[in-house]
Length: 133
Image 1 (spheres, helix red, strand yellow):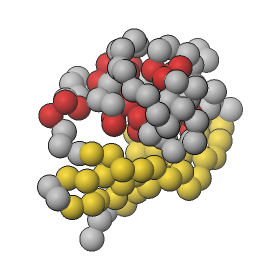
Image 2: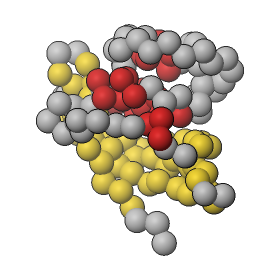
Image 3: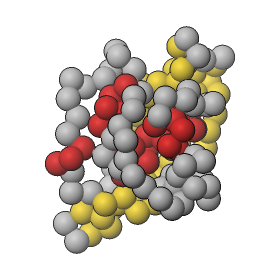
Image 4: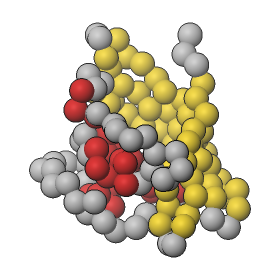
């Protein structure tokens, strides 16, 4: 899971912690404490273009064979978690709004992501998206 990225400053996930004290630990292999922590680390992973991390934290049953984050022209602007709910002993949903800029315009993604914990590790399974107008 280690993709060394040099990044200093506040964590892009919006936690108000430094990247080093927040998502970097997960990017370096520490298991996420809960589904929200994994979701935040994946948001940061998209921003820092950590393709291997994103694929490794995607559940094998729904994981794409390839994910080209380097080709993405999105510049991630912010994340707001609106709900985190345990839906079972090893399942959870996280609802969030993520903002990004692409092609000179600001966009939003509104998603309810579904997560599962297996062998002590959380994985992203899939998500339900709200369509933009």
